[in-house]
Amino acid sequence: MSRPATPDDIGRICLSLPEVELGVSWGDRPTYKVPRGGKGRGFVLHRAPHKTAIDPATGEMYDDLLVIRTPNEADKLALVADENLPFFTIDHFNGYNAVLVQESRLDEITEDELREVIEDAWRAVAPKKLLEELDD
Image (cartoon, rainbow, N blue to C red):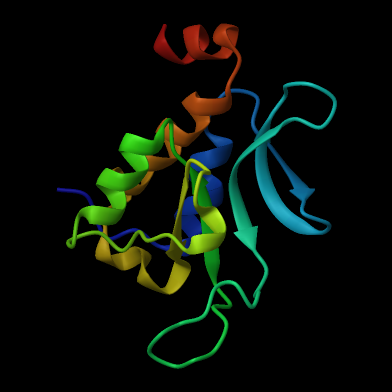
């Protein structure tokens, strides 16, 4: 069995995938991207605290959120619906295939589970030639 996931696993997993770069989006937010178009396509983003994402337990803005792409709405809903997983969404992300997770709650899933979610996110935005490279 895999060990609990940690915030350090995020970059290591993302950068282990073909042609991933750490860049920025949404102004200055660290974002893992694959080359596609002029700016690349992000699949994992470190989200800035924002009034649209308030912790119901504290009333404060979340300060450690990751946004992770999902391949489709069904996958998003499955991750959010599973009470054993720390993934959730907010109204701001209605209609967008992504889930949120607090870095401080990553230890509620295993490193392997985090890898699977991140790899699915990468697959959702990667060009076909990169998908073939990973599958070879």
